Image (tube, rainbow, N blue to C red; front, side, top):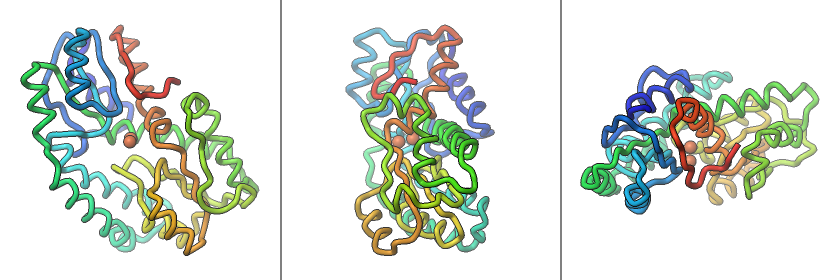
Length: 272
Ligand SMILES: [Fe+2]
Ligand SMILES: [Fe+2]
């Protein structure tokens, strides 16, 4: 048995984070939780389903409501640290995130943030979402896998092979794609860019390429950003696939819950 606080705490521990990031929150507290419905996306239908099937709590990955939906853009700043870590000057990293950060803030402002949360309250269904902590868990797993496998003469394809060893990618319907550059290109320095709300789009990939990174790995990218990157023609971009990659970070938490004898049903999560 666990409570909602313990579930959040467990995710922070796995991610090595001290505080709950702005894109994650508990909306309806719950205790004595034995049965969890764990969804990548959980809105009103999933809350009703959980009620109907006798679950004690709904845990979502993506923030669909509450403060987490409104403050979501703030975690995008995590891209700054990631860029600085591989040698991008701080001011340049700050400048690089500006445009998409503003776009995310403007978009967040549109959201009907109270809707799902109010439904959860009416149903008295414990409800929370854990986004960045689990993406950080996934980033570490994927980054470690890449850096344990690649050598100085590795190619872009070798990076793909390294990632494909993870069970989530073996089990997913989607494939890992090389969206920019060629499989036989030298990988050069590789960055796993993830765990910062959403992908860094055109600007962040381009900044990495300008600062000596040969291959950037995103979990998703918009067709428009990809087009722009292709026009510039620098570097290599591997895109691992949204749901499979989110699952890489989600499964470790589910396994921890199962160790505590919590029964977890997955919706949309690729099994490991
Ligand atoms: Fe995610
Ligand atoms: Fe996601």
